[in-house]
Amino acid sequence: MALSPSHISLFSSDPSLYLRKRTSSIPQLRWLPAETRVRARPFSLSIVNGQADDRKEDIVIVGAGIAGLATAVSLQRLGIRTLVLEQGESLRTGGTSLTLFKNGWKALDAIGVGNDLRSQFLEIQGMAIKSEDGRELRSFRFKDEDESQEVRAVERRVLLETLASRLPPDAISFSSKLANVERSENGETLLELEDGIRISTKILIACDGIRSPVAKWMGFPEPNYVGHCAFRGLAYFPKGQPFEPKVNYIYGKGVRAGYVPVSETKVYWFICYNSSSPGPKITDPSILRQQAEQLVKNWPRDLINLINLTPDDTIIRTSLVDRWLWPSISPQASTGSIVLVGDAWHPMTPNLGQGACCALEDSIVLTKKLAEAIKSKRTSVEEAFKAYGSERWPRIFPLTVRAYLVGALLQWDNPVICALRDNIIVPKLVRLGPVLEHTNFEFDPP
Image 1 (spheres, one colour):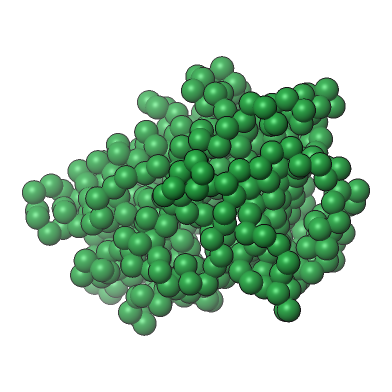
Image 2 (tube, rainbow, N blue to C red):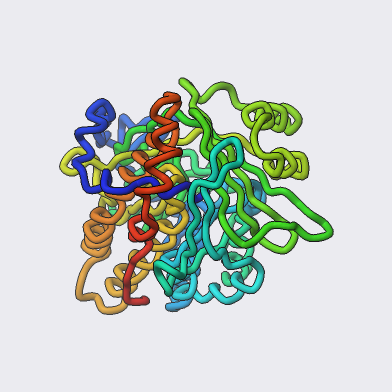
């Protein structure tokens, strides 16, 4: 969900001025001798002797989400085979859609699936910002500011299925939930699955999402709840949707919403609202629909219609979280031959529309570093992973901070500040250039 243009000059400020309270203690990685290793849940880190009946793999990727599949496809294109472990019985194709900007499309082109996806989704021409009473505050055209910009909302299901179709039939092992991670004496990593299967791998690439067990095992703290939740949905128009190809944002007091055409028949929408806690998990579509409608009951009718036209299996509610990778405090992206990619390493809020884009960027950079180490032998895998982390951190950390600050600004609920936003800041001060600056990402394809 790409959310909005208000990051202006605040992004160049020292983020520590805004969120000193976000610093937290980082759990320390603890090495246990083999005779005291813990076999219970949650994960334990220990040094064990490999067993003769362990399954052997060169590279294992945990998680068949966007980061995991993109990394697997990138490596496959270079002739490097991987095994992808997915805890679900099939691809996790639930959910709605995500917005990809030009940096995401560059990565998809490098992976070889860009054109297949472009043919299925509308190119978004610009954005319009409105107040909750329907008054248009500002509008922009993307190409006017950046001729190379490319924006499309993509269904998550289609993106995952397209990536998976590029892999050999046996590349993804479903119903393979990780239960334990251990370090073998020979330097390999021993994975134990919940069904008892044990896999010994030379290289482990963890793409297992925002609640990554591998990240926790490496010493990362749980992601931080940022004080906002979001409803998301994918409205369906069997006879064709009526909207222009642009992003529509609506700003209220402590609530904001938006919608964007995805294809000729589908429109993605979101509602983001302040909440002191994430609240209980709700999966009943009728309750989710009712709660979403209540938040915007007096807003422009288009939004209510979109909620009503959303199939039950595409409406969700999630809490927004992130993790700030503080320099010299946070653990590194890798330890030995184990590395984190995407949300497993750097979960960020969706306010810049960069979560999926950054995961795709990660996959490209990691593939290049790892392939050079495997094929040239001039550097070790451990050194390649360290180089990946060093290259990605200066990009990831500022984006995570910026995304948080955008959300904090747009979730204002003070009437006076909201009036200032609607009558001065957005109409007169916001420029599109700074909004799109973070989509500039150059790289050499693997």
